[in-house]
Image 1: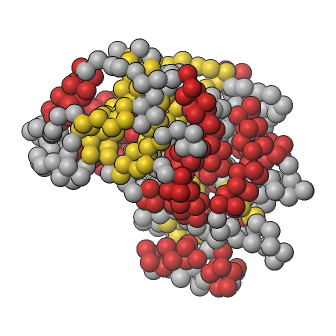
Image 2: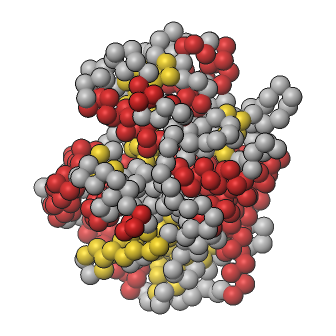
Length: 561
């Protein structure tokens, strides 16, 4: 690798998905902003979001109803002051995106169309057919280009530059030529998305390796509520490609191998439109008890909607089922199974994206402002990105007035270069891809929808063994140009760290709440566990702390659907 090259910008944003672009658009109104991303912005995982984005637009709905549904759906672990911000701002953010060019589907009278989604008391999910994330991302990318935001594409960030509790930039590898470079800044915003690829059966893109969370964690920033991993109820059997909740929102029905609509046994009022954790557990139970097809999947039937409606509102789902499973969804049911989908936990922030480190902010799925609690409602993730992405952009631009470029010891760069050089030159006996697959299988089998102490302890011990084996990996490609093997090695290191945090946090929470279901502790326990988990990396160990949930107007009660 060549000697250090330095780029300088007021604000560096890591990640070019919806949260990163929304923050960039806001901050760039008053200052110099650059976005560093490991893929082209239009390949960011936000583009995969299908079903819609929530907002209380109707006079028959309200932000209070939206908030109540969100808090109940999250099994009362969400911080209610943050949820209030999310739901109050939702209509304005939708109107904003519409004015910028987002092509929302329309009702017959020209209003933005809204469909029912799981756990919602009102049809408040705005949508653009079943390509909502795609439309939103294109809109924001166009707006950032108009605003003059600078993009550095195909860079992998290897470290934050933190000195004296202040973040002053990042270190990254330029994949095009292999250079290890420094980005000097007054502030950094992490918007790197989730860690879905710690599981083998995930809807997430291969790029979703929890980079931002791992970067923060290795700088002793605690990670919050990492035990809460969302499994989407309906992914395509065999590939785990997302089959949108929009299918059920439009009237799709789940059947087991006996031809029975089984959700009536688990959520008799909302049926298929119960929150995702309930539907996922129901499907997994049907499969485990022998009522799944091939003991591996159930069927999702949308044929009764008719071809015209399917091709108007669910065209992408039709294409996915046809091309990846040979299923014509207008004529036959889609085979579905649960798959990892979303991370409720992440880097703790306030409602403006600020972290515990001066100059460091976070937004989107990598952050945990705690609006999702123990289980995210469908349609709230896209909303979170534009609400809190914007707020982070506003906050950092405001804070910048009191900030300046900071100097840091040159040893920070030298030590990072030495680490990367050692990684490239490694000649160990372990191979990256098999190790990554082994980790994914372990998490899928032991840290899935249903958990228990024996399985979690086994997972923890095996992850720590994998961590040791990672130190004995070999990188065959010693070149500089597009060294994807090096990128995979760095991503694997991130996944291993996060897997350990997930398991340790899950072991500590001895109750069942939302997406975290312990067979050995099947009941929710508000007396002892109505608090957040904070996992911090200190002296090669994970130290756990706990923080009370913020409750304002909605007192915890039993979830009945």
